Each structure stands twice: as C-alpha cells, then as structure tokens.
Image (cartoon, rainbow, N blue to C red; front, side, top):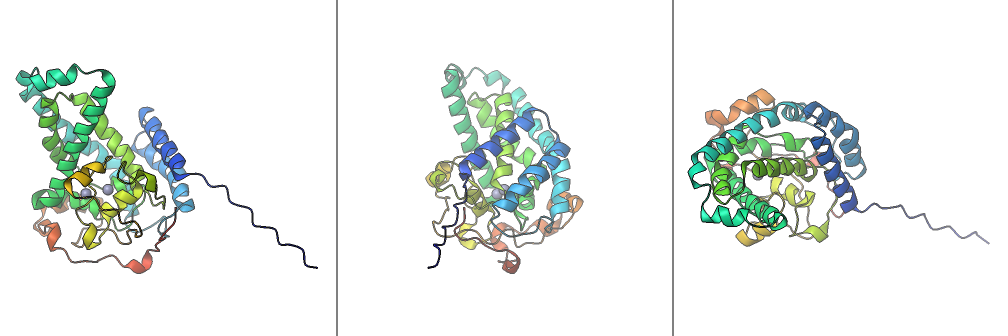
Length: 309
Ligand SMILES: [Zn+2]
Ligand SMILES: [Zn+2]
C-alpha cells in the first residue's frame, strides 16, 4: 500500500504591508541618521535589491540598462534639486512677509498640532498634485519631468532619476499658495523630504499589490501605472500619497485585473547623466507628451507577473 504523500509545507508569508511599512520606517530612520547619498546607495544595494529579488515583479537583471546613470542621479541630483527647491521658498517667504498675518494663515496657525499637521499635509498634497499635473501637461515643464519618466525599468534606484530643475519648478508652483495658507517653509521642506523617501518604495520592482490601499494611499502598483507607457494610463495617478485627489480630478487609473508591462517615454532621451542634465535645454526635447510614438520599450525583455503579490 503506497504511503500517503505529505502535503507540501506552506511557505510562511510576510504580509506586503509589513515589509512596506518596515522599509518606509527604515528609510526614514536612515535619513534622520544623516546617511548621505553614498550611504543610501550602499543601503539600497544591500537591502532593497535583495528584497526586489525575492518579490520581483519584472524578472529584470540587477545590472539593467540605465543603472549607471541612475547611480549618478542618486549621488548628484538630490542636492542640486534641493538648491532649486529652496530658492523659490526663500524668495516667496520674503515677498509674502507682509501678508504673514492674513486671516487664513492666522486661523490655520491657531489650530491644535494634530489637525494642523493633517491639514498642512492635505494642502501640500493638493499643491503637489497640481505641480505634478502641470509638469505633465505643459510642454515647457514636461521637458524636465520627462527625464524622470525616461526609465524603462523601474526599481528602487530608478526614482532618483530626475532633472534638478524640477525642484525650482515645483517650489515655484507650491511655495506661494502654501505660505499664504500658513504652511511654513520648514513644514514644506519636511513634507518634500518625506515624499522623496516614500518615492523610493513606490518605484521598487516588487509585485506587492496592497489592494486594500487602492484609492486610499499610494502603492507601488499605483505609481508604476503612472510610469507605464500604456496609452490609457498616461497622465494618470499624480498624487504622492493620496489617490483620492486623482479620483476627485478624474485622473485615477487602477484597473483591477491588469498590471503595467511597459514603462518609459517614446521621445528619445540620452543615456548619460550629463546629457540628461542638458537635454531639456536642447531643441530636441520640445516634443510634448501627446506627440510621442508608442511603444518604444521591447516587452520581450520584461517578464510580467500578472497576479503576484
Ligand atoms: Zn510624472
Ligand atoms: Zn516616479
């Protein structure tokens, strides 16, 4: 009589929200501990890359195209972006000094700490949404933001790819209304840093779906759709944290049974960091997003996990 075959042991499964939350907390702690860009690079390859190998969404190589450029971005771009961001905040703080005591700011600053922080966060998110949407819809701003969207492979380091002029652009758009509403320059800076740190998680090549967050809080799936090159997903999912803003303005895109397969833009983007810094100023970057040809990424080298995570 054949022996009964034992049932295979069930693999212990760590909920994706536990991993995401722990990662976000760890990235925040490392930032507070003043781990610089070089430390962030080491931390990313030692911890985030192995996590991406375990829960990979696309079976792409660690040494994928563009990795070297993105390493340069991580080491050089954040400091330059911060300079660009600080300039309009400082200028607007000085210009708006006489209006510091306006009734709106006075009411806002009289609120208790917690409601004040929540309200400031929501204001920051709405203004961030507007700035991001303008970056997509105005060709003069898209030429800078196109650098961030030029990644054809997403992983933790791909989020660092950006043009530093974005700091100046976003700072110029959000600083004045935020300061008029009473949100201080320090608060603006702190929220910007938190957004950047959360951005590391949003770009990761992981298949966590975190469906229960859909429409409530941003997830990797949500931001991967923002980067996707599918026609129907273009110019969608602009929020950093609160997808409800996209829902209100009709730019929310999260199909239930599909996942993004191709990323990037169709207009050409040079490969090196230096060339990417110069590209938005060249006449070749003039094409607005609507005129690009799709698709450019070869889907054969990206393996899609349709229902993982
Ligand atoms: Zn974008
Ligand atoms: Zn992104």
